[in-house]
Amino acid sequence: MPVLYCTLHERLLSATYNAWIDFSLEKIQAIQALYEGFHAVNIETSAYRVIETACDKCEAASVQRLAEKLKMIDPERSGQT
Ligand SMILES: [Zn+2]
Image (cartoon, rainbow, N blue to C red; front, top):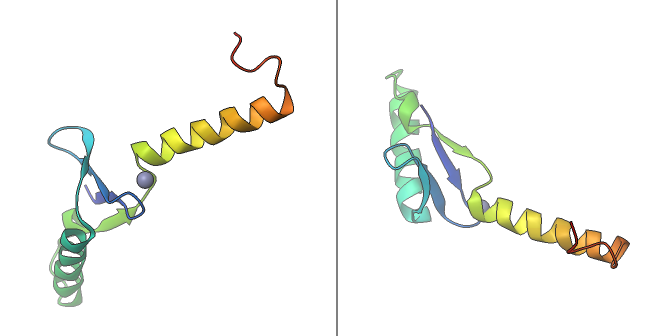
């Protein structure tokens, strides 16, 4: 399984913990360099392939932005369910 990583928040989806964890950009770049080196000589290393994706913090920010837009559209209904 490839590595899922969010560059914006420097978060990695850990297969071990099944959760997003903080992971430095420096470390992920080292992993990407390893992958590219192995890939260049046709060594199978798909587990080191890094895929950029939205993390838990991205999703939380997205939900927050949506809530703010809803509040602008319909201030009376927002916050009520
Ligand atoms: Zn993110």
